[in-house]
Image (cartoon, rainbow, N blue to C red; front, side):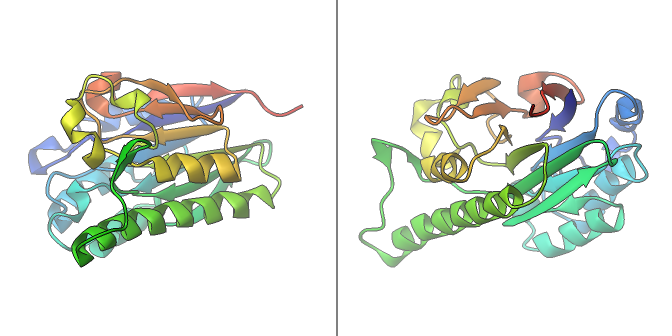
Length: 242
């Protein structure tokens, strides 16, 4: 059994130091990896990133993360990512990574993702240049996720996981106002996941949403925003193939 610990939207600030560390230190023996699904800081500053870094440094399991919209607010996401990487996290944006202890091989493909909405109620590449770029940015994020998952498909991974901040499906947004669904996720992410294949998709962003969902292709989706799961992290169990 492969154990995936995950949480998003922890929104740490200067006064948050030490809030999650005691729980994270219990991961040894209960999880094989910790996934962070974005919005790790409040305003995307270096100071806040350093708080997150101290929470995750030298944990007993590998840490894989994507950034969220809050982590971009101060216009220095590369600096935020660099601070987290210095603490040992693997921060993904259109990339894949493999973690494991030799007995277990876990492939993770990650992107922040973006909005745009879902089938039947989504934005299109039409009209003003800003609208076209909005949708094209979402498409680039989805395309990079698909490519990263396909890269993992060529490796000997026991499981493949898609890690995003924005949601790939509307299922896990239930509870949020329908008017803001287009700003919470995009069907393009689900298309990428279904096309490339994955065993699990994990996201955050939707604080008032629902934990469980599924893509049209049958991939399980989990919203791990901390206000949704109500704990420091949740552990999901995946069966090894064969």
